[in-house]
Structures are given as C-alpha cells and as structure tokens.
Image 1 (cartoon, rainbow, N blue to C red):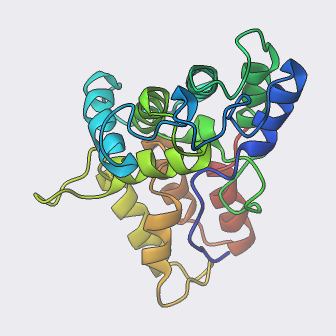
Image 2: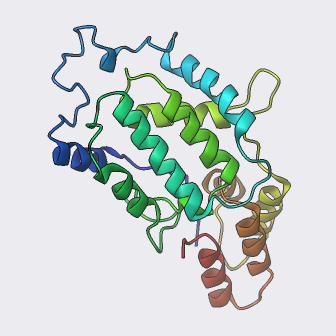
Length: 240
C-alpha cells in the first residue's frame, strides 16, 4: 500500500441538489435572484473582506470553542457537522427552510460504513475517524461564512485557514506527535513499500485522523507478516 495526497472532503453539490429539489428551491443557491443583483444570498462581502480572510476570522472564533485534544469526531460529530452545513445552506437560501432531507442526506453520507482515505474522490471521507477539534471548527467556520461562494469553496477556505501555518509558523489545528511517529514507521516499513516521498505523503493523507487511529496504525507496522500488516493498517483508517 502506498500513500497519495488525499482529498479532505469531496464535492457536496449532489447532496445539496437533492435537498433543494425536494423543496423546490434552485440548487444553484440564487433562489431566483441573479448573482449580480445584490441579493443577500450572493453577497460575498456580507461578513466583510475576501472569502479567505473571512474564513480566517471565522476560524479564530471556531477554534476557541472546539474540543481540545484529538479524540475522534464519532457519529455525533458527523451529525453535528451535517447540521452546520445545512444551517449555512438555509441561511444562504440554497435550500428552503422547510426542507427536511438536507441533514438526513448529509448524515447518511458522512456515516458511510467502509469510508477510507484511499477511496475515489467521489466517495465520502471517514469523517467519524477525523479529529473532533478539526471537524467541529470546520463546521463552525462554514456555518458562519458568507453566501458569496459555493459550499465546496467555502469548505476549502475554512479547511485551509485551519491547517495553514500563520506568520508565527503555527496553524489553528496542528499535527500531533502521534502522526510523526506513524509516518516515521511507515517510511521505514518494508511491507507497505513506500516511495521516496512516503513520509511526506503520509503526513498529508493521514493528518486529520484522531490519535487513537494513528496509534493503532503504528502498532500494525510492527508486525512481520506483510499481508496482516497491510490489512491492519487499512482497517485503522476505515470507518466502521
């Protein structure tokens, strides 16, 4: 098994379109208003500044209330994230307030059994295994964002604001020592046949996972039977 750069969250518009269709609201988020008309649903400056700056500001508030430590988000975290996405879409008139399927659709999507970081980009991420502090802060940032950007772009901006180091060299969500320990073990593994950039790919692909999953995967690499090692390693990052 070799690692590659993983997506964080795949495009979400298919789910939004389903919810919008069920409520009779246009899936493009304009709710009948042209994006150039100055309507509130398309005002990119309703929270002030560029979307990237807005995301950074939202992250400051979100990380002050997000849980400490790197416990898994779990099903409750995935469900809360689904509610935050739908709250943003309702606020921006992307879905009708009476639509009942948005949260249900997102919950089912993010609770998909078998989700893992090596699936196709159109597959759901193993959100329940991600760090709770990251998932909580990301959802809060998205919920607080303005309405001038598509949901996927808003999500990208918020994620970048959480993971990109500031001028002091630190990011709101920093990797833990467990990630470095795992990636060093992965780079030294003879079973998983990492490429010369294996350790770098490891830190990119697995950075969002909770410490328990990282520790489990590190233990897997201590085995001598390569078939068992590969199966064990993959299972550590696969959503049950």
